[in-house]
Length: 159
Image 1 (tube, rainbow, N blue to C red):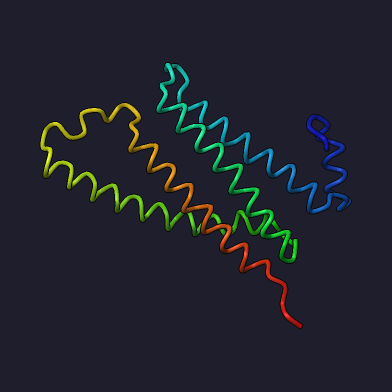
Image 2: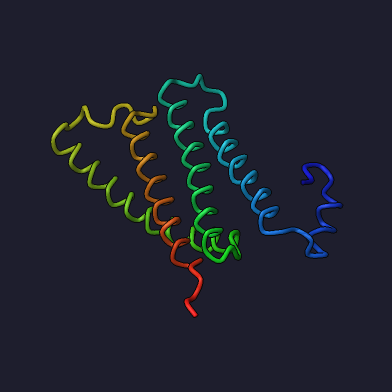
């Protein structure tokens, strides 16, 4: 595995010398580093709280676990095109989850303002445990659907 020598890696890619397993390792490191860096960048200049650390840990753990489970489902099936499938399936799943959570958030805000009036939404600048719960639910929903689709897509055809 090349973590610094881009030219040698490019040659292997050009010559088709990277196995599905080797490609997964690169993709997995990419996914984990991206999730980690995104979490760190969210809190630059802030003192992290227990809530923000918990949310970051949840995202990282769910990303690692969900990606590994998806890879296992794909490997148990036909073991083909993992990265292509991951990227392509993620887009419609993320769109559906985003629409679902926007609708839920709007309902949450309406109900909150109806029953709590002015006191509702005063802490909008800080992360709350509800944010952590919503993050956990969205990550669970995303990887549940992704693993489900990998299970279906990677099944070998019966002869």
